Length: 298
Image (cartoon, rainbow, N blue to C red):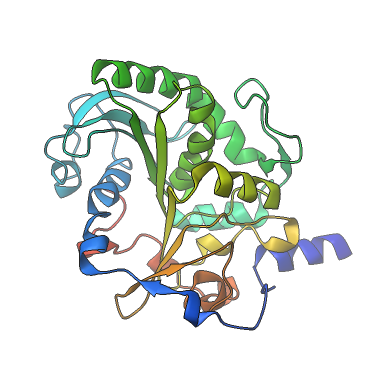
């Protein structure tokens, strides 16, 4: 019973890393900087709709927000396997990979009641990584279902376009999968290929060793954007050993986008300080709106 009580406290994110705010270390993005994320917000939102190679599914502006995008591959069934798609964006000179999120009410319940065991990554998919690097096994198992298919698509697109840039994106569960892709892909792509990740409403994915590895590997190419008082980014709790990597951007109620340095920054301008428990969160904030009124989902 004691273990379950402690686990519940951890999942609810009741612990805070510190009570001291770090306002002096936090900066606010300009309008132009916020605008630069808009293409990826559209890509993450469109992943909720059943993909096709023509991007002809019904998602309105979310499919037309990046009009030059050239879809190449897609998959998933929206149930056993999350929808995903990959293609080429000539305006960004980058391969794009996007993963579908999930129903936030069900996802929050899963993160509270589900299998939250941390475990090592598959050594075949993630060769050479230390066994101290551990991640949520449910997320790892989901990412493994599409990893090799997505890798094949990315390799083909890079060759077709003589490219060296890949951006993976997603919202909610899709962001967790994108983060794992951002660790997986560089281990198998040609030397000199850059892999960036931009996620929205991302839950914690792994332990502190995982977060440290991501911080060193990504060197600033990871961004995870949290909207107002969204509770999803504060679970699973840190009492269970979970830690967010650096790269947080927190959208305030005022509309300001604040850059929060470090891992799980405790400032009340950042998600950990602003939402100390799920009881202080607003699940309605999870789907957005993000920049320019974009809401996740179809």
